[in-house]
Length: 590
Image (cartoon, rainbow, N blue to C red; front, side, top):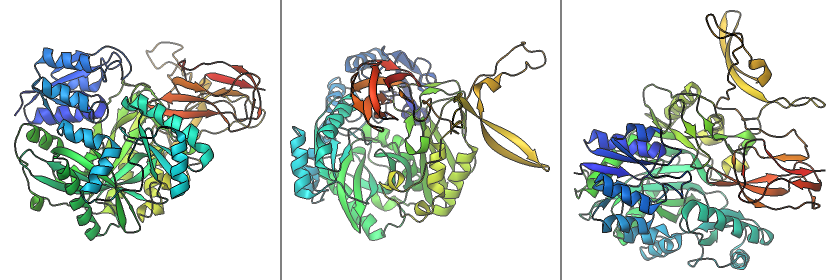
C-alpha cells in the first residue's frame, strides 16, 4: 500500500479521499489555488502545496504545477477525484511516466471512454447498443440540422470530452442549431479544455440509470449496483438514489452484465460508471465515466463497500476484496446535492458567497460529505457543490422520509442553496411513485414559488430584502417561520455590554435569492457574480421582452441574461471578459 497520496482536486471530493487515506494510514498531500488557501481540504491534509492562480485553468488544471508538487512532496500516487484531470489521458500518462501511480483506469481506457464518440463505438463492438447518434465530431451546425432532419427533432449536442451536462444543448428545431452549437463548444472548452462535440437523438421521457463497476489488475470486474439519477436540471443531477425504483430485476441484471462487457472491452480497472438511458423497458448505452462519480456514496450505503478504499487497494496492485457473488445490496439510499444555487422559481441561479453558518443534520442513517465549514467561501470560479447529504432507510419510503427530515434540519446561512427545490422534489407524488424522468424537474415540477422573494407592491421602490428564520409562539405552541424583511430593519440595539450602534450582518438562508432588478425594469441586471462571455446586443438595437442580451458565466455554467421589457438599447455597460457582481446593470433599455 502507498505511504503518501496526492489528491489533485478540491472541495468535498478531496475531503472524501483524504478521510479514506487517513483510515488506511496513508499520508495525504493537498494542492490549492490562491482562493483555496484556507479551504477545508487544505486544513485536513497532512501536507499542502500552493499551485498559484485563481481560476481552475491557473491552478487545478495547471499540469506542470501539479507535477512539480508531486516531485517535491514525494507522493507515490495521485487520486484525481472527479472533474478537472480525472478523465484526462495526457495527465494520467504524465503521472505514470514519472513512475507515480494514477489512481484510476489505464490511460488507454480513459482515451477510449473519455471521448463519447469512441466510447459509443467501443460499446457497440462489445454488443451494447447506444442511443442513435453520430460517431464523428461535428464540424459545423449544418451537420446538426442534417441529423435532425434524418432522425427527427429534438436532438442533443454533447461535449465529447465532458460530463455533468456541461457542453450539452438540446436543439428542438433547425433555427436553434447554430446558436446551440456555438454555445455547446464554448462551454465544453471552458469546462474540459476541449470543444469537440457530437449529436444524438434526444429521448422524450427517459430515466437516467447508471451502473457502478470496479475492476482490478488481475482480470476481475464486477458491477456493484445501479443508481437512478433522473431528477436533473440543466442536465445536471440534483437527486440520486440506489437501487433504482420501479426497475425490473431482469433489467438490472442485464444492465449490470452490459456494464461489465463495456469495461472488459477496454481493459478497464479501478472504479468507473457506465451510464444508460432507460425508457419503455429498453436501455441504451450513454457514456462511461472513467472515474469516481459524485453520487458514489449511495452505492456505498446500500452495498456496504468503501469504494475509495477499494480504489486505493486496486491501484496498489491488490485484487478486489470481494467477488460478484459477495455483493449484497440492502435497503435504499438517497443522495441530495446541496449546491450554492438559488432555485429562483426554477431558474437555479448560481449563488456564490460566504457561508456564515453551516450545521449539517445528524441522526441514524444520515451522512454528510461536505467540502466547506462555517466561514468558508464558495467561489464563482469553481463548481458550486457545497456537499452531499446521503440518507439510508430499510426501504424507499423510509429513505424519503429520513431525507426530508434531514433537509428540514439542515442549517446553512449566508448564501442560497438548492434545499427548497430538493424538498419540493421529494415531496412530489410523481417522485414518490417513481414516475419522473430526466425532463421532469424542468417540464412538470412546479417550482414557481420556490426560492422567490416577495415582490413590492406596484408604485413602491423595491428595497432589498433578507430572509430571516424566526421562532414564534401562538397560544403557547412554537412555530418556525421564514420572513423576508428590509435590510434597513436589521439595525439592532447593542446587547448588554456590547458596542453601541452595532448593525446586524445581513444573511440569506437556504432559500434566499440573488439580486435582481424590479419587475419590468429597463435596466437589465445580472442575478449573480460572474464573467460576461458574450454580448448579443448593441446600442440603438430594438429588443423584445425575454430576448437574451448577454451570456454570463458563473460556476462553470453559462446563463442567458434576458431583457424584461421590449424597447431600444440605450446603453451597453459591459463587454466580453468583464467581471460583474450580483445586481450590476449590464444593459439599459428605453
